[in-house]
Image (cartoon, rainbow, N blue to C red; front, side, top):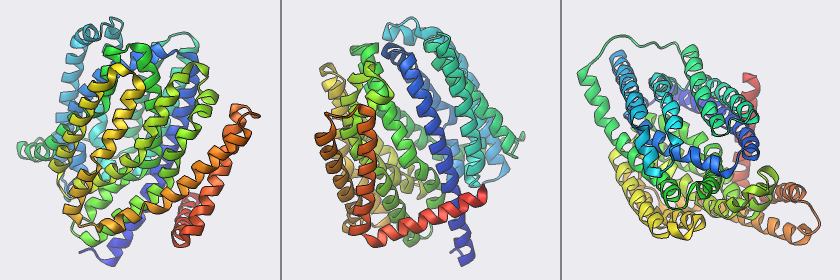
Length: 493
């Protein structure tokens, strides 16, 4: 049982971690979006489709670099030098081996997709495996120490420099190689900064016993990541194989925007959730309270964005991407509806891992993946909108399985849990009505950028008013949290 002082220290660490995670995530995504907007206007859909095909292979191989060791390091209550050394040298050795194998097998992937230009792209991107092998354990050590400030500095510098390289190469006419250059330069900078800000250095201890301990936990993480890869990438693979590069380009841009929203609105807090929930694993009541609080606060921020994107997607794409990306609009409108489900899954997974049940998460993900792949395979020939629809429908159908697993672990009160979402849903509904009304009366008279700006301002205002009226207590808690974060940010500055 933690003492009041230890509990206070954990709370302070959580708040500071959230602050720096927000700075990192939002700052990185703002820079990434700016770079993305510029590159989308300089490059065509076929180019984005080509790089998306390359990443299918790269991301699959990347799964085997870490072996789940980083999550095991964060989750363990106690960790010693031998654990870290063993994890580092194992990860680095595997990353070098995978780099060699990836370079050698690039031709097979290119032959599968019937795209010979993939060979040199995959071979160059394979270098990133070594960069990740050098970063994995270092990052886990910093996350375990709640050193999210250092991680934020590393991430922001990497995305800025990588973005500059990518845009510069695109202006010079390098095409798809500008996206390759962006990725490699960003990965390289991350390694340099990470080793600069971290004081941990690997020794030369290696323990077979510790390797077995880490692997026993990590194998479930790796298996989950393999399953999750097919869950996330089966749509790209099938679209690229059956519908071609252009269709994949339109789909990948819409999906990229969904990932950005999830990173900013959900992953910001879930990154901190795992170490916090892990510290509370021996205190179920406090863990449940933290789970409720995190879920509600995040849903208040995330729900309005995800549910309002469908009604503003047309104006958003036209303003920031241009007319050449019009075919991405219906895909983005549909994909954004999966956002609320991802919020629920992310927090549920954090609790499952924190309580040492990675195999539970694995089996839930197996069900996710099987249903996703079946759905994609059935509808892919109908087009990218059908694929996006299958993804969303599947997510809502299997949601009860995740809730059942959480209830087994922390005994949630289902009615209390569902009530957490009432306020953001009602307020988001008011936002949608406001946007539709604004577009109905002003859509014929205003240009897309002006209509987007006016609709957004009115919608945000209505959302804030609605939350304050229907739940004054929650609104006050949000204001108090915002004030606390603001004070701490000013102190940091």
